[in-house]
Length: 137
Image (cartoon, rainbow, N blue to C red; front, side):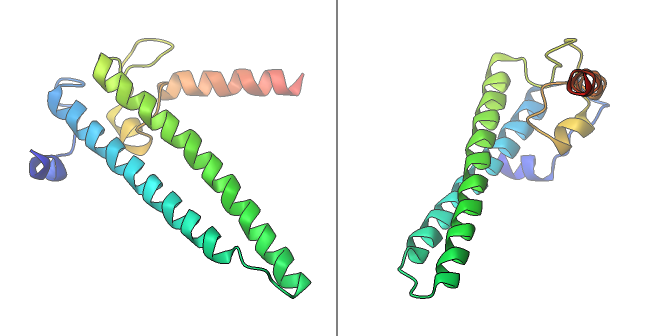
C-alpha cells in the first residue's frame, strides 16, 4: 500500500476525501511529524554538546543566543506537532479536508501545500481580513 501511496497524487477528478486520499494525507502528515521529531532530537543532542563552559564571553553570549533561537524553534515545532495530531484526528473522524467555517471541501492544492489547513482559502482570507480590522482599531 505504501508503494502505491508514494506514486499517488490526489486530484479534483476523484471523489473528495475518498479512502485513497485520506491514506495519502495520513502518510504525508505522519512523515512530516516524524521529520519534526527527528530534527528536534538532533537539536537536543546539539544543545547538549554545546552545553560546555566557554571561557570567552563572546563565545558564551553567541552560544546563549543560538540556544535561545533553537529553543524558540523547538516550541514552534511542538505547536506544529499538535496541529498535525489534530489533522490526523480529523482524518479518523471524517472531518479532514472540510472547512471548519463553511463545511465546504478545502481544495486539494491547499491541502497539498498546507496539510494542517482547517479553513478553505476563502474562509482563511475572511479570517485574516477580520484580524486586520480588529488589529487596526
